[in-house]
Length: 113
Image 1 (cartoon, rainbow, N blue to C red):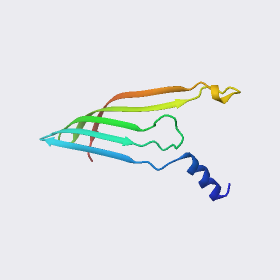
Image 2: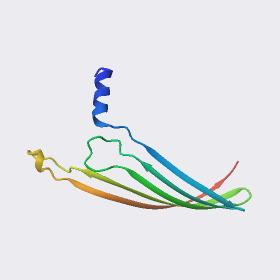
Image 3: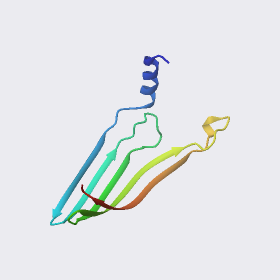
Image 4: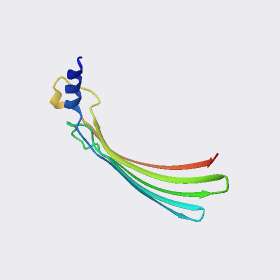
């Protein structure tokens, strides 16, 4: 494809979007408390489902002299849709809609050098 044809293909599929990230951290001695929020907009123009992704996070860290330990929680939520197979009449294709809500806990040990 010439480059102007590729741009037309991308412009038909994708749209402008926004990303928002906010966070804060409080330090009390050797302990740090964190909280955050992020939202990533849906980049697809013709999506029947809003694909915006939202993240809510929280964390706690403790710093030793040379080491640190960090515990974080992340909640991720978004919706998705797909067609598992196609029929000859595309108006009758089955559509699967998923509401994702993923919770993660991450424990990190580290050192500064």
